[in-house]
Image 1 (tube, each protein chain N blue to C red):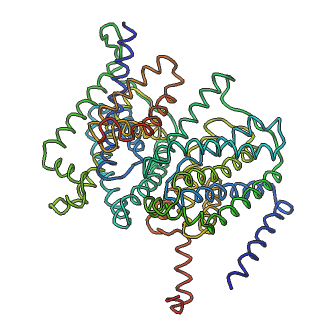
Image 2: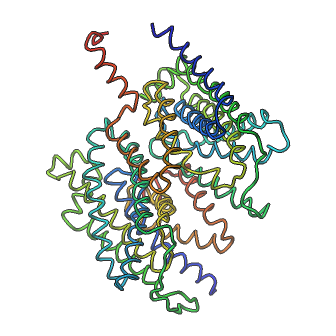
Length: 288
Length: 309
């Protein structure tokens, strides 16, 4: 019974993290139509910034959220304004924009990763924060991992309320449905798309801070997280933000069950689910 | 006029390439062999993706299957047989993958093929650790000029195939799939069979190139063999060169692969940065690649007298 509980809680803890990562990518793909392969690099930036703030300046990692979030947001916003806006105005069709923006994001990946290796070096970094054991009905977990889950849920819910209840959220939903019509209704489409890209990047930055609480961070850590984000986004339905939130927890649970059976197989299982899902139901859990 | 000098020029280039190992250093032979390999990957990628518009990120899977064929069979069988088996094994994989996935469209096909590479990589890794207890394998040793000549031979076959496909009815049918698949189907083209066949043909060359490239590497593991760079670089090289003409991808691959080798050796710490910037510039400012640049320059040089032809 305790083992079962252990697997479920591990899955949920992992799933919360996956959900935040995937919601950011989902926003970038679902609204701004950019399948951002450099997503993991924003996670890496968030993680390494938190590490620097904590070890060099002694700033509490949870407080550094106030730095990582806005900084990655501005970076994402500016990148969309300079790079993707140009690409979308010169692309002949949405399909061409999707492939050219994906390739451009590879360029970004190379650039950000290389700059980060120059700035932080190749070392694997980590720090110890809130590493106190917490007993959950017999299963023991570090407090920092529970903090991750709490933050993941808080970010997810806050973001959902923002999109569902505010005026800007309505503009974002309109832009996701039909950018041209939204533009005709008075939505400043370029700003909304850039904001979405920025919010996606900010979520990645926050996820980076959460990851740094209990996992090592380094300059080339980003890509595996991008891959996980893509799997979750496909699982939840491309472009569906609630789908990504649920999908994150589903993948986390699957991951912890498979890891219990054979840890070497967990990545194989992720890709197998991904490939089978694309074949059987490419629209995902929440897709239409 | 062009009809006469193009084959002549190609023949001269071929003779020069064939004579290269006789007079140059070992380093140059390895460098040029690597460039030839990237041209093979890029041109065979263009055979399928360039005309149909399906963005395939599977080259690393086909290339890696070739590498593993060579690692498993290289010690026991003669070299040409190993290379052929490498090509055929990749082609079989492409047939299966193509049969189940080519109904996926647009970005779904791209991310599927991307996931496929990672799936195979992680599965092979798990399998190797379970079965052999080690991660990597050693590949049979072959001298560099043999590798070079095999690579050159594969390249010649790849280019001839690409050329004849492009010139045939079959190439025209592929082109029409790229423009409008529904219209192509209504015009009587067996869209599915054509796509699968082309996908499998393009995989042969990738697998064969992988099989011979493995011998240059001498040691391989799943991370080296199924490296996603072998999927992305051909795409980037094709875009960099421009896909409007057959010489575009060749030129793009040659320039980009050479640039990459030089950057890796000269600026090992900044090479990805420079590559990323070149890539962004190519996507932003060279929508038709180097070919577009050449055509624009030519038009400017010859003035307006050809404007209406």
